[in-house]
Image 1: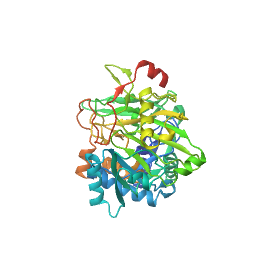
Image 2: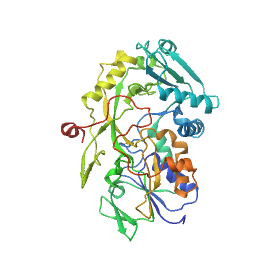
Image 3: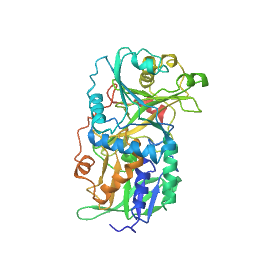
Image 4: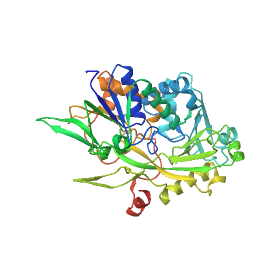
Length: 423
C-alpha cells in the first residue's frame, strides 16, 4: 500500500486514535482524523471518568489480548491506571456462572502470575468493608491486578501522541461527516470524499470508519452490529463516605450486569452502570429503520426501568446509597455485534473503505495495543484467527446474544416518549 496516500479516519475514539497513531508509526504520512468534537469526544463511548481494565474473558483470544493490554496500562499508560482490583460476583453461593468459570480458568492458564482470590458470601464484605451490602448469597472471585482507567484523560493523551506524530485533526462542522461521497463502477464502489456538515467535501484516498455507535448514520450494516444504549448513573458522595470505600475494588454482578467503580479520587463521584442488552432507538432510513444515538446533543435521561436496575444493584452492594438522587444519569452507547467480536475489515462493496468498529462495550481496555491489531488487519498481516474473528461477515440474525458476559433483561426499543426525553 502507498504510504503517502491520504487516509481519512472518521471517529476520534479508541479505535480511530489508536489506529491513527499506529499507522503513523508504520510510516504512513498523510493521516487525518475527523470528528464532530476534539478528543476526548464528550458523547463517545471511549471517554468519561472511568472504564474497567480487565483481562477476564471466557474467550482465550480476548484473554490474551487483555493480559497484553494490562501490561501496557501498567507501563505506558500507568498515570491513568488504578489497580483497584475487580470483584466478579454471581448470584448463588455455588460458583456456577459459566462465563466466570471460563474467565478464571483462562487467567489461571494464561495469566502469568495474576493474583486471583475466590470468595463465597460474606468473605467479600469482610475483605472489603466499603462494600456494605448483604452478599451472603453470592460467590465469585477478585482479580487483584485488574482495575480501572481514567478514560477521558487516556484519550486526551492518545490524541496528543497522534498530534506529535503528525496526525492532523478536523473538528466542528468541517469534521462532522454527513455522507460518504462515492462513485460506482462495474463491480465495486470508490469513496472519493467525505461530505461534512459545512457542505465541503474532503478528498479521500483511503477511508477508515471508526465511528462506533454512530456508524449506522453513514453505512448500512444489516444485523452485523446494533447501537444500544446502556444505563449509567453518577452519585455525589461526601468525603467521609468516599473514605469509607477507600480500597474497594471495581465490582460487577454477572447475573444482572450491574457494576460500579470505587469513588473517583478528588471528586468523590460514585459511578455505576449496567453491562446488559440495552435499549434501541429508531431512525428512519429507507427501506428500513436503524438504532443509533443522535448526531446532536443528548439529554441526561434514563428510562424508569433502567434507573431502577441501577438502584437494585446498589441495594445489594451499597444499600446506604440506593435512594440517593443521581447527579447525572445518561445512556452510554455500545456498538454491539452478535458475539461481541469487533468488526475490523475492508468493506467488500467498496474499493477504499476499511471499518474498525463493533466495540460491544469492551474495546476501550485494549487502548495501549488496539492500534497494532487494527493496523495488522489493515495491512493484511494479522493471524488467520484474528482475521476470521473480526471479519465483515454475512449479516446475522437480529438476535444479539453477545459473549456471555451480559446480564439483565432483554433488549427493548425506547418508546417515542422516552426518545423525546433523550434527544
